[in-house]
Image (cartoon, rainbow, N blue to C red; front, side, top):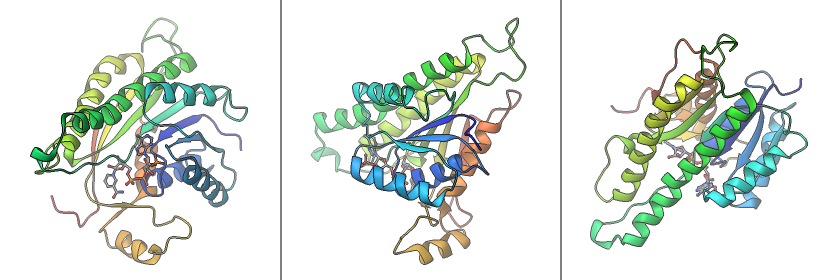
Amino acid sequence: MAPKGLAILIGAGPNTGAGIARILASPSHGNLAVALLARRPEPLHQLTASLRASTPGSTIEAFPADTTPASLERAFSAIASHAALANLPLELAIYSVKHSSKKPFLEETHADFTDSLTTYVGGAFAFAQLAVRRFLRDHGEQPLGAPGSPPNAKKGTLVFTGTLGALRCSAQFAAYGAGRAGVRQLAQSLARELSPLGIHVVHTIANGGIRDEMGEGREDGEEEKKAVAEGKRMSAESVGRAYLWLHEQGVDLWTHELDLRPAQEKF
Ligand SMILES: NC(=O)c1ccc[n+]([C@@H]2O[C@H](COP(=O)([O-])OP(=O)(O)OC[C@H]3O[C@@H](n4cnc5c(N)ncnc54)[C@H](OP(=O)(O)O)[C@@H]3O)[C@@H](O)[C@H]2O)c1
């Protein structure tokens, strides 16, 4: 079955990114072609090969990139001219970069603090801008309800994977908390500006561990399956199913922020 559209995910690693990608690419779930972005080419290509092998009928391609504007522009342009992806409309764009930093405040430097914000928040901005331009290019620029606009004319979904640090954060996490809160506010502003155009913007708050317990060759696979089954960890594929559900929401009901947690996670 040919993919019905395109998803772009930055933050393609072995846990959350892998599970989301498998669900989006699976012909029995999202049936989307998936473009995967992360910085290191070798693990990215290995992950792509393993996801293709475990997801028959999928279209998954790798585009090594970091979150700088120039690198993201190169990746989006390579995606746009890739033979297997070129004619597919962008449906879902996911910013799910793993980015952490912990340091006593007096050991933090201005350079490291601002570098963290540039990488994480600046990256979210640059990724979002390219994704939004692509949504509008692929689905048209008419606002919802404009004369001649079809009903339920959703143009795509932009999801930022956030954490509790976006709401409140612990000692020594100044850069991390500032970055996570910054992306949460970016998502709110984009949602207010872009919803009337038909672009759905979501910020998720993942509380607790996420594991791709279905990932191939995991040494801790059995342990992780047990933790998922007991509600101690979230399955990365369940995060993928939640993201797909968000994308499937019609224009009459859009979730903007979503708290995600396994059953045994403390509130
Ligand atoms: N796993 C959990 O338990 C958990 C729990 C709650 C929330 N989350 C959130 O879920 C998201 C994914 O985290 P994860 O731990 O599960 O990781 P993951 O999906 O397994 O991998 C994320 C990938 O992001 C890539 N990355 C990091 N910095 C990047 C950059 N500047 N530009 C491009 N790619 C970059 C890394 O690959 P490269 O090094 O090759 O770039 C990494 O492998 C994060 O936002 C995290 O906070 C995770």
